[in-house]
Length: 470
Image 1 (cartoon, helix red, strand yellow):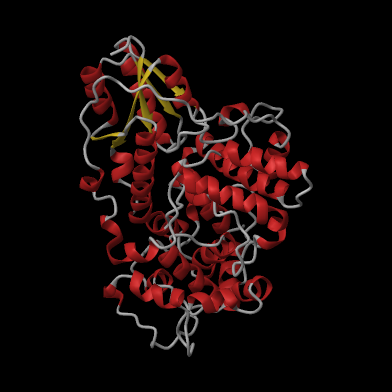
Image 2: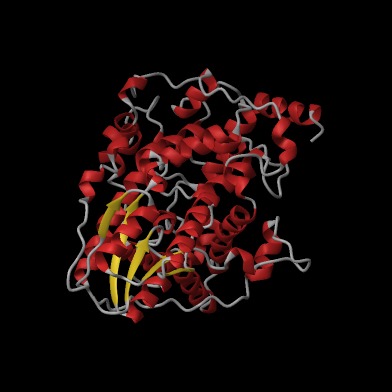
């Protein structure tokens, strides 16, 4: 092995372009790319774990096209890295940073242990636009409200995206496990073939989708992104979650279109900053993913029993509220859900049904191929009222008025709900093929009456807030 050789530890950065850690490793000499199946992978929900497998397959092919390869190993990260260091003689391990508490604790231990053994262990940015510790209020605190956060970063420089580097392969490769043996898609069961029609994995796919959106969609993004029946969003969340594209690449693409006068480009940048805001909060308040961000909500009387019939009806997309059920069915068929609809789905569970937001967070964690640890947590806490900048009264979404405003022709609802339609769409019927057979549901079933009406649910939530002094 050359004297300068590096293990590049891939995690949520499964791309070759604009990859600071990979570029730095390539500049040193030999690069051995590795992905580790540790607890962070084992604990993933069914859909994100399956989608990760597709991304790893694409990354492996991209590396082989550059004369390299992806080494796959299973086990605790530190043990695997130490084994590979012993096998290969590398003198450095590089990786891209993550920001949740569990990842930070793991990475700090890795950095300390490897450093003690004379191995250069170094982390790099690339998963967010602005490192969480670099954005602070005038008082030196972290931001707790999005709008001031946006104003503080909107004009900051973001590093120009890096090209994919040339890679030098070692004279001898260490052994690798086989990706199919990991069975990352096992939890998808019969839903895998349905969702696969809609998944679009890989760095190349991400770049193609970005180019099409900037050419055809970003100009009207500000107005069309809230219309679930239209293809008005960027659809980049699927790629950002596994790092098939970097936020900096999206930022600079939007800046170019903004300079060309595309009306929706700044709104798109705001959405990228919302993602950064989620990671900013996650880094500074790790409880975001597991408990009420606003601790005064700990005493709020949410239902926490997932066995209740209301929760079952919500999970099965049989609440009797069409926009809510359509959103959940979209998720089961495509692995994603339109953001406007997500807010209604989350609000209905946490406010109309008075169920704890953690029930919904965990369900999304299992079902979304674009699941993101920070965005999922912030979205649920924002909708439930327990998160930052929460205003419970104003955020009790009325799903009926929301449907009238954003889906006035019921095109979205008709696309996803088969019951009661003479000729339901293929997508609506696919829901019954994707869900567990044990649910025993059929498109010939009558569509249910609302388990809790919009007005009844709103009144119940307001009464609960008043009784608790909110």
